[in-house]
Amino acid sequence: MADLLVPGFWIFVLINAGIYTIFALGLQLQYGVAGLMNFGAVALMGLSAYTMVISFITWNVNFLVACLLGLIAAALGGVFLGLMARRLRGDYFAIVTIAFSETFRYVARNASNFTGGDQGSLAIPSDSVTASYVAPWNDFVASISTQIESLTGFTLDRDSVMLIAIWSVAIILLIVIARLEKTPWAQVLRASREGDLVPQSLGKNVGLMRTQVLVLGSVLGGIAGIFFALQFSFIQPNNFEPLATFFAWMIILLGGATRVVGVPVGALIFGFIFAGTRFFDFPPFSWFDSADKAYLRLIIVGAILIAIVLWRPQGILGRRKEMILE
Image (cartoon, rainbow, N blue to C red; front, side, top):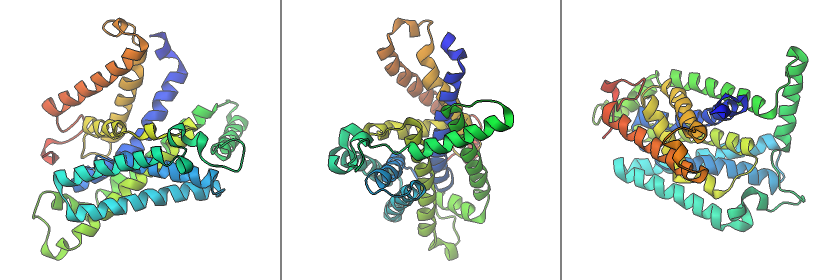
């Protein structure tokens, strides 16, 4: 339990909560506004991360341009899902998103000459001796740390600067999406998820609007993917398993699927549950070794999700009248 009092632990929790806030915000936009069940969102996160890393390592693209290419790749993935959403609804669309996610992961695993395969970004083909993509970001972080030290006298390590950067972006995106969800565009999408409530004059545009919301949500997932790759300095296919999408769904259901403000609340609670339980040394946690505790955390996460669905399906901050669970 003493480890819970170490500042580094809370910085780690907050960094992961910030990344998942951005990631889950994309799902909240797609599901909370348009009612689209995207169970393959992690593929967009991975697509962006891999595109950024490969562009920088293999193609020697400028770092900022590589990040932009990563977001474009995620947006194109959203366009593909949007085309599927025009033809498929409900469970059928959800199945397609799962297939899309797993197809991406298996391609990343088997295209070893391009993606590095199971060895991840360390094995991506490069002209340099070491395949590293974080050097430009580390230089930027070091410059920010130096400026903060000169102004305040406080020395911040890399994780502290990452924490500030991730949550600054997350807060900006939360504000933007919150305002977007109050626009007539979002109101039409909310009406479309309930059935035939859209005026006939707007009905023809609903398919395009669903594509737009999928692209926006995918770009948010892409931003989270880039931050993930930068934070951990290494990516591999197993980082983008369906479990990551499950975590994002738990976050929005925990906070409230129809409320933007519920996303960071759910992410913070989830971050503590998932990371903090590894340091619990009282029963029943003390009955398990460190390896078994990893599975115990997943059991706890699943149990909490079941409890939410049964007793408070609208989430902590959600409104029951806005629920669209089918």
